[in-house]
Image 1: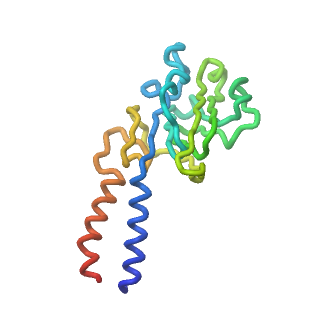
Image 2 (image 1 turned 180 degrees about the horizontal axis):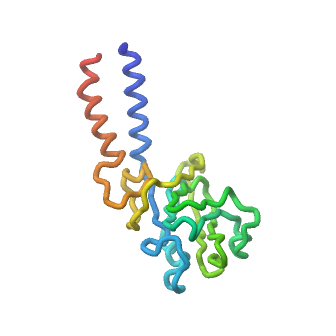
Image 3 (image 1 turned 180 degrees about the vertical axis):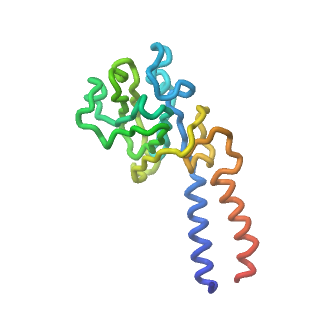
Length: 192
């Protein structure tokens, strides 16, 4: 590999590491309750949202059991009426799932099973722009491969890869990125 190609490769790796280092916040919807029918109004999702600031790029983790609940983004009128009318996207039926908040404004989510929404299984969040001028990241919805254990809000770089784990991840993508940068720092002078 010539020196120019090596510099291009190292620059690309550095860009990826910087992207992962930008803090995103991962919210476990409902914390310990997860995405379920609230047992009473004191554990409602409107109380859960209270005091939180959601930004474009933040991630909502909906912890639910497949075939018992689902998640659907809807406009406010459908949220208020607990209907699927004018759904925004498709119903997510496999849990748990991560939803990246891709635009500023109000976001409304409901469970479409039976009367779950009417019983309080619905979430409304207001998302603020995270970048100057309100430019948002592209939408992304992914399903994690392992069930998540509810945890407090995280503003650590490990949140860059939003797949929750059942145990704390001391490595994470940020740590891997730091190891990669250290390795590049060692070998780059030899290549040049």
